[in-house]
Image (cartoon, rainbow, N blue to C red; front, top):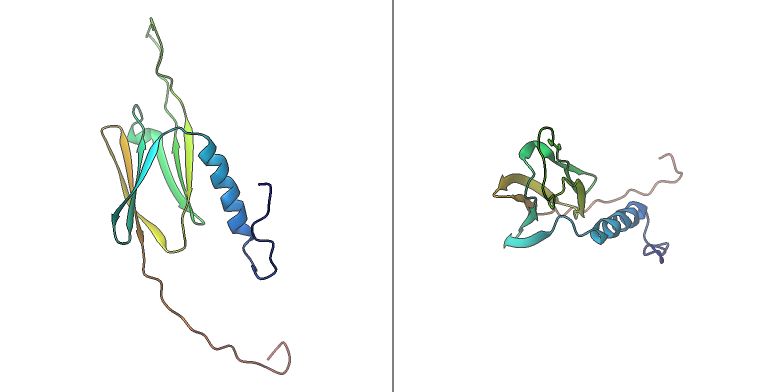
Amino acid sequence: MSSRVFTSPLFLGFDHLEQMLERASKSAADGYPPYNIEQIGASRLRITLAVAGFGMGDLQITAESNQLAIRGRQTEETEGRVFVHRGIAARQFQRSFVLAEGIEVEGAWLDNGLLHIDLARSRPESRVRTIQIGRTSGE
């Protein structure tokens, strides 16, 4: 990333956000597999990836530290097969999405070569906390 986004001293503890943005920009450069993101409700989203040729055992979805990662790895079974033309490659992929605070993965399913992942935004709690002022740092 050429310019740092969170250089202001007012952004305390946002280093991890800059790292997530950098990872997301690298992931976006590869266009495989193609995907859609649609809004399916006031606080719900659905990510759909075109994963033709991948079975449920070939796909892995993980959510960690506000990052959703989808990985696909096909096991190539070419033993005993003779290809006259081979245009469909067994290609592996990793697609990552950065999730905002409060967005949770509801579930995922595979249907006709499309992997659907439903996300929901929970309503954030409004919290106000009073900080006591002491005479020294230990009080």
